[in-house]
Length: 256
Image (cartoon, rainbow, N blue to C red; front, side):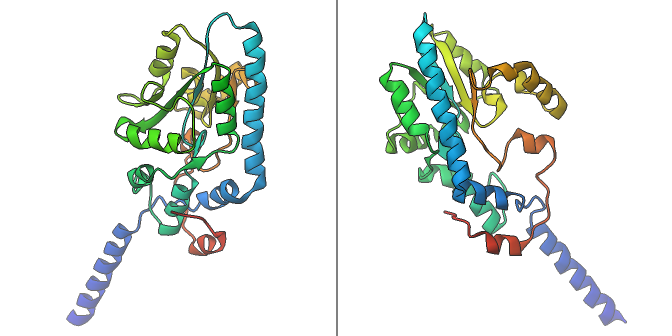
C-alpha cells in the first residue's frame, strides 16, 4: 500500500512539474493568422492597397497644404514584418516577450508590401517621416539598422521615436506638431496608432471611437491588416486558446 501511495505521489509530482513547464497561453490561435500573413497573396494585396491609397491621399494633401507635411507611422506590422517571430511562437510553443529582443537584434524583419515604395515617394515629395513605435528605446539602434538595411528614408534617431515611458503615443505625436508640421497621414495596424481616442481598454468604447471617427479612415487614417495580435485580441480575450500540435505541423510556417 505504501508503495502504491508513493508511486501515485511521484506521478502527481511529475505531472505538476510538466504543467508548470508548459505555458498556458499557447498561440495556436495565431496559426491561420500567421499563414495568412506569410503565404496569402490577399495579405500582400491588402497592404499594397493601403499604401496605394496613402499615396493618393498624400497627393491631395499636397495640393492644399499651408504647412510642411509629415507622415506618422507605426513600425511593427506597418513597416516591418514580424511574422517569423509569430511563427516561432507557434512552432516552439512560447509566449511574448520570450525571444522578442533576440528577433529585434537580428535586424531581419522584412518590409511590409507597399511600405518602402510609399515612403520613398513621400520623401521625394519633401514629406517629413516619423516612425513612432512602442518598441523599447533600448532597441533603437537595431531598429534603425533594420530600417536602413532596406533603404527606408529618414530612418534615424530624430525620426524613429520609440517607447521611453508610456505606451501612449500621444506625447510623441505632439512633438511632431510642435515642430510646426501638419500630420497629413497616420498609418498603423492598431487604432491606437492614430489617436488617443482609441487608447481605451473597453472593447465597446473603442468601437464607439471608431464610429465617431469613421470619416477619417481612408483620408487621414490608413489601417494595415494584422490578424496575429493587437488590442482587438486582448479586448476579446483571445490570448488563451488550446494548443494543437497537429495544426502547427500542417501550417508549414516560416520561422527564424
